[in-house]
Image 1 (cartoon, helix red, strand yellow):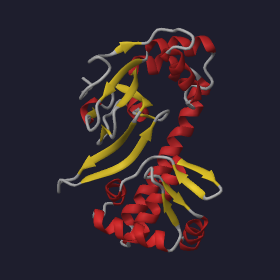
Image 2 (cartoon, one colour):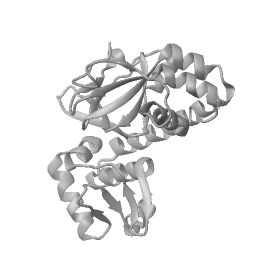
Image 3 (cartoon, helix red, strand yellow):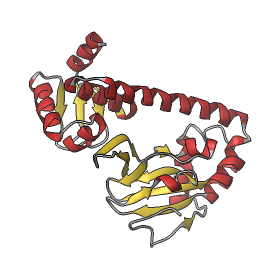
Image 4 (cartoon, one colour):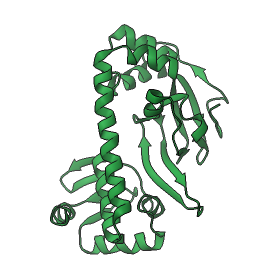
Length: 251
């Protein structure tokens, strides 16, 4: 059973279609996701009607390992982190997801649980698609299957980047690789450089890089001093052109 620390009036809510309603917003959100882009309007509307909505309070558990093959999740609002706690009790962050992102699709495909948990970083609302509905609407559509393969390739590339983080003995290179990964998955380009569009604390980055928070703070201060990054008041990080140049030289 999926656990919640708070939420949409304490339960699962079946969506109902109305133009301009939250359910219509959900349908538009589904249309923007790669899995669902090739569905017809009727198929998308039918799928949307099966989506269950649930709310989670900040810091509550959205998904734990034994639940991870029951649903695919879509972030409707808020932000979540994918974590695993090591034998030393230290939390490792593997990914972050914001509004419009999704997770849990791999467990839908092979039926196996995932060795990770998902926690709400702020008050968060998610849409849940059950495995039976996932199979009915997605796995029978060749165009959707093609999109699924593309998404799995993207997940594999993210995993390779995390291996790069863990394989480096150099703390600065770990932080640089984490920032590069976050820029690839959450980056927005503007005149200043690439803005990582999720709010990041030093603790978040330390969780990604498997480093002490104090080490990350020192390295970020150094990168700011070298004018490679800028940290905005919103806690978003801008990777400037100098950062990208140095990454190209390093790689």
